[in-house]
Amino acid sequence: MLPIFVLLLGLAAVSQAQAAGRTLTVGYYDFSPVMYGDSHGVTRGEMAELTRLVLRRAGYRPRFRRLPSARLYTALKSGSVDIWLGAPGKPELRAHTRESAHSLGRVDLNLYHRADTPTPRIPESLVGQGVIVINGYSYWPSVNQLLQDPALDIRLLRTATHESALAMLRYRRADYLLDYQLPAEQARRDQGLEPLPHLVLQQVPIHFIVSRHIADSAAVLADLDRAFLALRAAGRLPSLPEGSLSAAASRAP
Image (tube, rainbow, N blue to C red; front, side, top):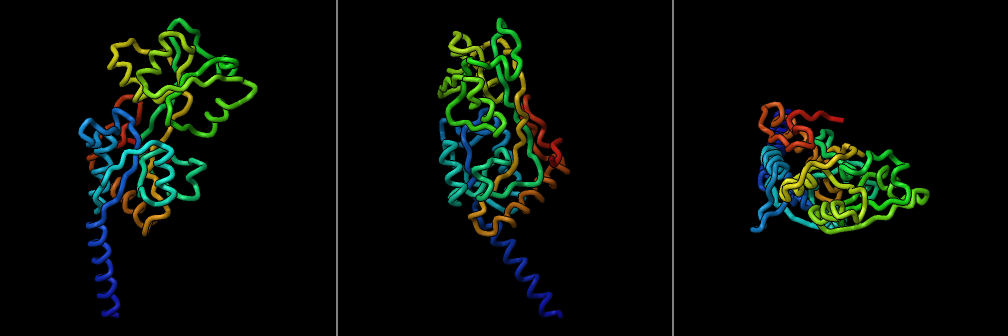
């Protein structure tokens, strides 16, 4: 029995050494202020820092890769991106990814309107109305069904940035803006605008999403879950800004 025990110890040591030297590519798209690329190409934000802490605790080295959402999903499906921090349950990714057991935090998807517009009732207030949306963002099936319901006849007005979306709302291109709270609030503060009334349409949990097409994907995900729990228990995780749950306080859904 002793030689087998020694062999197992040796294999465990090799596995740990391999993990310590392994670089994992973390795909993301700009989601300021929690994860974004600065003008020098450095990935910044509280979620980026959380990712660095968890991967290093798990024995991996992070390499960040900024991509548009469509290319990011394609990269997860091929395995050219190892990890994404995003919403679980995406139908197009289900067969190609594994999702962490624990939520890292939450972001709110809001329907904004001007102060001179009555608080909308969903869905009847949206019938025949225009809704401003940001290019490159995707939503959960329930929100997509709402936007695409032919009975509602919603007109989608697309724009490239949160700043231009706020301007479109302000100048009455449409009465409603669909946007995630964190980047929308960042853009609003940057422009010196007053807070906008809104309804929370969805509270979206954030998980580690690991491509099934990388080596040892299940083991990698288990390593990340263990490292996240250890850091949370030690109180070493950064708190996310207003509009999301503190990562340290998050619990498994």
